[in-house]
Image 1 (cartoon, one colour):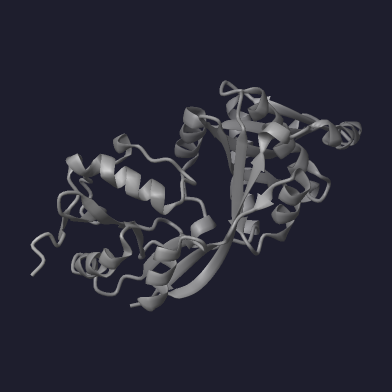
Image 2 (image 1 turned 30 degrees about the vertical axis):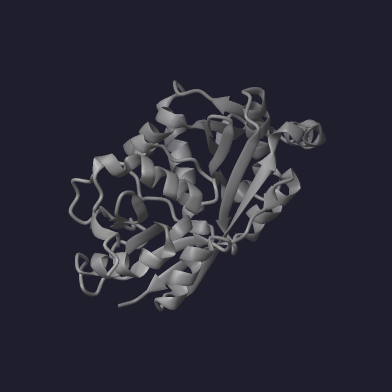
Length: 299
């Protein structure tokens, strides 16, 4: 009998550093996690389990998926894959009997991909991710596009947090319009936030570049700077003004601004069905990464 076989238990605050390391390793360093990000949850349906002996060997986080799939729960595994099934079995005893389950993993995250396939999950949706080396980004090739748009009545600006309430109302309406129009899957569908929640989130952590036509906002791109990394959150252009290059120039301006702030890399992504945005990012020089797969299990 192996006396050192890990036991399955609830996450404890003392596990935070090891869990952060396991998750950072599981995503191949694509994101860097810190112990401060991990705390026991007070929400009954949001919990984390670990397989541990003298140290944490594997972990599973379970959480309600959100507005895009309100009855489903997301499973996030990390660590030694030989313990995934045991953690999964324990988690099932704490979940509603017929709730759908969702897993999200990149193609090269082999441990998670293999587990979801073996556990009977269906490869339901695919999303793309892409990155750009900002140290090599050059705005100059987009100046002619910006000038042509200016002649046609369009201007791009960075929107201040103190912008008039009317501007934020227009941005919010544009965001809802874009979500309605754009191809999407549960992983790429944003949370259903109220205007107040949406505005507070942007002011707290994001930068917005807006395009105006004769003074009226008709497009935007939102992004977040995290250290030396820029993440694009959402880009949208109103229906009458699409297919003119506005999404390209908006994102190019955001990239140039991040570059000036010292960012060295940018990331973006979306569903594989969103061909217009794939073309925009290809034009900007983004390089595609392995696809993200959303696994689905109907129980």
